[in-house]
Image (cartoon, rainbow, N blue to C red; front, top):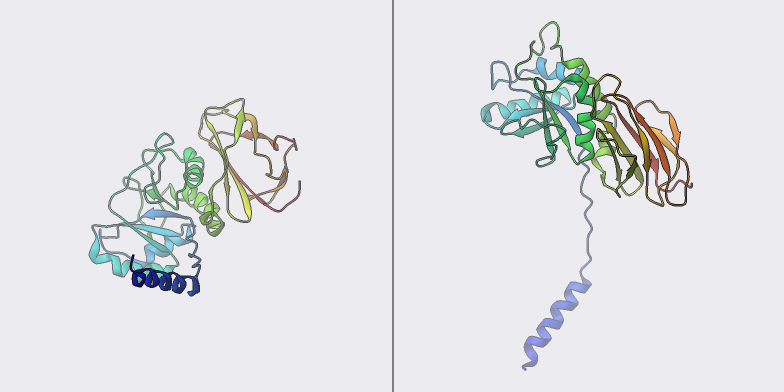
Length: 269
């Protein structure tokens, strides 16, 4: 074998080893609760509408891909209103039984779901990896920017505020280890999420029937702290029962309810 190719290969390897390796930290993309916005008339965005959307707690608008001409003006207005812009071809309404984010996006139809479902549906979408949850108001009453907002806005906007207050944290999370629920409750889902510093619990009860309380126990993996978990909604603190096999939490969620808790991974038991 000729020594020339071998020497060339060695030189190349040495060059690679001497080249400093840069680790690029990608920016975190916050989680957004958005509104499908189509303009008035359709395809023509209005700043007054976007300001009204932002004032209700939404942090983004979702614009139809087909309305290319209005997209540039929309981005300019949205920046002024403090809104992110999501471009998507068509809404794909999700349900509890079909809740798979497409490119991190989930749509909720205001007319085919009930307001009682929205809190649990949004938080369950976030827990399975949604980064944008967009409410689609097609078929509803009212016009943005006009006196009197659409009747659905107050509830959807309340959920948007819940998510928006913690959007940056939520955007850093990935799925953690599985949680054991005993006895099982069909309507209840408890997911453990994590980033490098924190554990986050997202618990949701999809059953909105009056009196449908999910009452059971969730057991978390060893190494997850038992206390003190911070409730992201009201700032209260909960503690779990410490057990050698992993902390145990008595879960009790009302109809359509969601709860979200966070704890530092370094906190001792």
